[in-house]
Length: 216
Image (tube, rainbow, N blue to C red; front, side):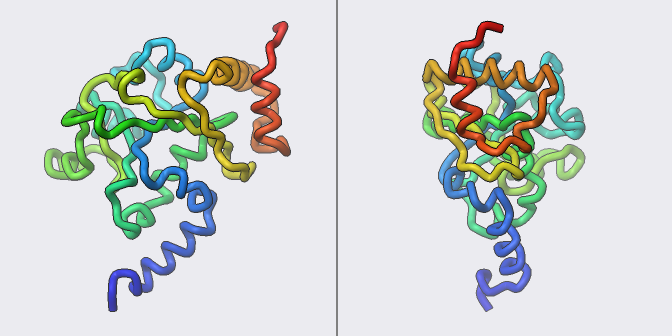
């Protein structure tokens, strides 16, 4: 029996493909990504870099305070390009929420591997250094030692609707003038606690609305 005939992998693969993350994964498969929200993306664009969280940013997830990336002062990333199928399918419930859990959408910033250079820390470093004393996601999570310059390392971003919406992620260059407007409007939507995007019928139509100027 080969790895690809393993019954557990077959079940995991089928569940992965049925899930929302399996639908959008072809767009993620060959990249290295940093995920965040609209408001945080605005801060990143204004700063010109993705910075490690040293408690100056709010934690999006409760486990962040005990994570390997936070402990080391690294920027947390996801790297799928170097993995076998079994490695990204395994534990996918533990990482898919980072791409699908944002309100009103998640921003996934794709990065250039060559530009990251030797500051890119592989997944195995966490276990080799600390075992399981800190939180980290097997296989898919990697880290960058120090800030990441968007001008040299940023490639594009994906705007990913929550699982219940089901639309294709929208790909945009990081320097697209429309992106700033969309991020600003999305941030306002979140701060006003309007109906979540997940119950709105058309994700792309909503994004088009956010492109339009507002008198507010």
